[in-house]
Length: 287
Image 1 (spheres, one colour):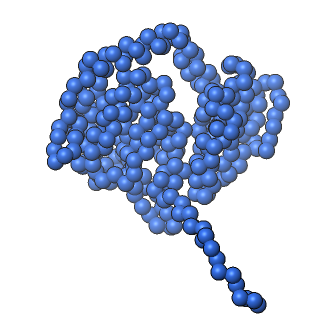
Image 2: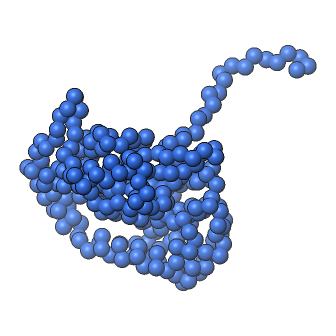
Image 3: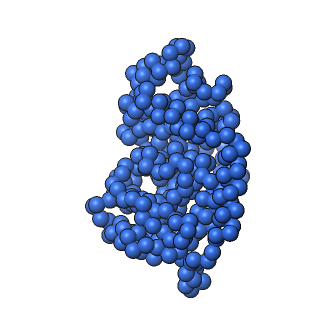
């Protein structure tokens, strides 16, 4: 454990790079000198070259750490996979994001949420298909084509991001790209929900594998209208996507930091706990 008492926050951040390992994950807690008192930023550092076991341990204990510290005392969670990312720019971007979120008053935010909720209730309509006891969403041809390409293991991209148009409730393609698992959280929208499909090429027990993962993210900054729309249509979106590509696992997350390689390993290859024997016959003398 390393504790710094430097009064220069930004200088202190840069100096932490020298004590981080290139292969060992770490949690880094930073007391903000520019924010509300008692607010802390938690940095989840998991290097690309860390052992799979270490990645899984840190992924599984993250929420326990947050609960132990008190979620009300954590202002932001940041995930990095390279210690060079831990620099002044990282926190200046974080500070700008805080300023944007604080630009509206509490009353303005509440009024906007109520307005969005009312608009959703009035404008919501049945725009789904019903086939063989299953509901499907309408989907754009562009999105359908991208999904079909991904199912054939195209080399053009391994990640698809889809958005649900609130006016038409049609699944539209937002973007396709090739991305590493630990970088996905950086391209997901931080203020609105989305559906994503990731074709994860990896190895397990020295065996190459490809897993198709459906990811539904709904950040806490999303409006009530968006939350209602995406949560109510999530299963239909998944059913729609499955028409063109098999899905191995479905992941839902509110914190984008949760979307990383360690999580993928934990959901695709869950640790099997051995059942404890309730009673063991006493051993014979001399055995």
